[in-house]
Image (tube, rainbow, N blue to C red; front, side, top):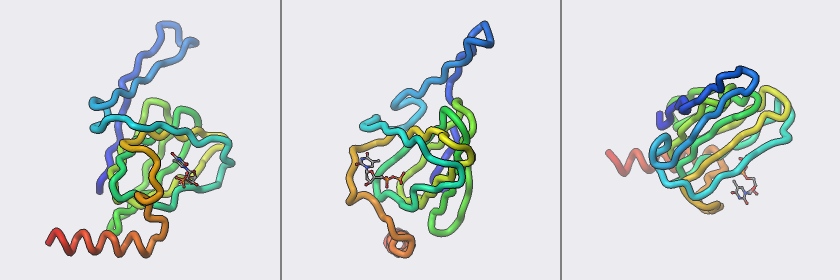
Length: 141
Ligand code: TYD
């Protein structure tokens, strides 16, 4: 499976009421130069977004507020990762079908990506995704 759960470098303030600070650094915590960052917010609990895979895009997903479950599918195996703390992130390689499920109202999804938005990089149909993966595996063997 082409993903990894990452714990961000975190500084806790001396006074607990001043909270914590978590850091994400390009080329260090994530193995790609950052070209784009976007945020998804205002989503109600129980709703789902995503339902696509990327051909070449690398992404780093985090949830600095709330709880979001990421369902992953590489065309063969499935997995799920719960992002429920600001110091936690998910490094997602290309060619992974993913669905984001909002566990709590208004949870915020932050995405850092390796490239600019390009609709041609999306596979939005699950059967097409399976076919795409099948061709890659066939080509590799
Ligand atoms: P999409 O990636 O499908 O979001 P999600 O998987 O969370 O449902 O994007 C939603 C819409 O926003 C779609 O019309 C494409 C557009 N969009 C941009 O214009 N730029 C971007 O950087 C992103 C991520 C999406």
